[in-house]
Length: 110
Image (cartoon, rainbow, N blue to C red; front, side, top):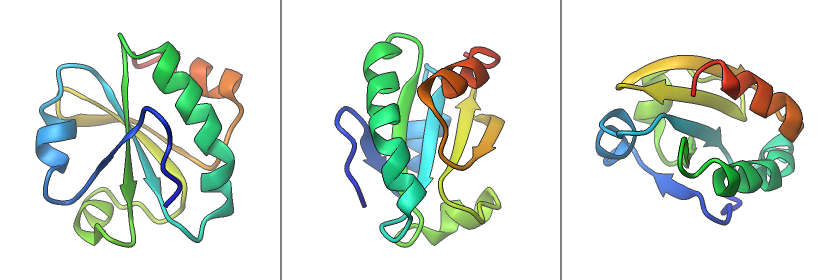
């Protein structure tokens, strides 16, 4: 998995504590090593994580090593970006996107 600077990795074991119980909204990047679009969006997520740190947390979940969380949220395509607020998924986006488009989509939920 491409480790994104400023973005923590989460697992099936700590997903509830790190994402569902977070005070801030959390964008979860469901990713995989074999996924070229996941590598394409990595620098975008790093920038957004740095710029929006006071309003949004971004974490990565490697679907190959964490099948329970992937299955629980019906994630079938990588990358899937899912925003959680108050323990609930409030927005889901599939595929890599430019920073401006991602920020526009996030503005609805953060």
